[in-house]
Image (cartoon, rainbow over all chains, first blue to last red):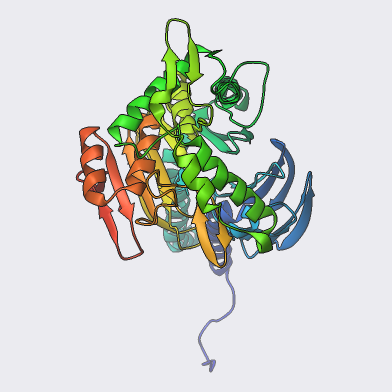
Length: 131
Length: 351
């Protein structure tokens, strides 16, 4: 921008205040936005063995764990989805269940007495899913 | 002074904007804040060889646990009574089977009640739901278990054995003495298998005693005991038999009804690349082939369980007649493109 002589471009107190309030506004919008989207992002993958909670993993951090009981299930969490990708249980129904995502969904390995559930704060559209 | 006023004029709109923005946030939060009770979920993996799930609203986890503990205790009692594979401290269906052709067995009045209802279901489904066909189902059960444990050696039950077993499925040979509270199987080769009824029947029993506002599922036999807080209906998703876990055929509103689905993908094994499921037609002695899945919606969960099995094995017209007669709604899924609805079902579909 070409500065023309005679135009005042120096900061005054008012300008500072404007900058201050605009920044505040931006931060405010940012915080509100984060709280919003964070609801979904706060979902966790909870592992229950024999009816007891044994582990909790964030849904949006990729990772994998082994769940050992009578058999061993390999749980993978990837890009907001979860699945049992390997299991030495008979039938392997848990592996065949595929990937789950969204609050309220669950994976079950009956022979291993393991349930994996996606839990979170937000109300989901569907309360229960029947197969 | 004038400078101060200027500054005020400049920043006022911004302050207003900021207030409005925060205001949005505050007002948006409010409707949720009004719901005091929290949704809780309990699951049990030890009953009826399936998953039991209870959903409900309570102020605290302890309060919810008290409710689910009671339901679990009742379901566990039925689990033992209706078991055909294991012995317990009490006489159960297995005890009756073991005494077939030998002697009447004194049993809990709930077994009597169940078997009387089973005879009723047999009549109203034209024999498609027959708890006296245990000998046939046993052959399929063994073949399936072996096939699942050793997929390469999976085989179908022996045809001759199936036909022989089919000669011992006459439900009239199951003699119930209500006053003596005994059950006697007259035919020594007849076996009871209440698998098609027991879960739904037990679900109905516990739900009639349970508090309002719960959603109980015993292996997919779903029963609501009243709407959620503020009279909001439960939403039950019928999972697509084809898609992944996140796809539904439909989502349905229920308040005090049961939703039961019989599908060929629920329990099966594979022989020579072909799937053989658990819903055996008493006439052909082989898995029913007309439908991929049939869902039934009506209040009584035991009836819904029986009807879903029957409708799965019957042509649509016949099934529709039976459903209508018992005030049940139904949905038949033949393929992804071919889905039929009974009158009235579309009203409870969530769009």
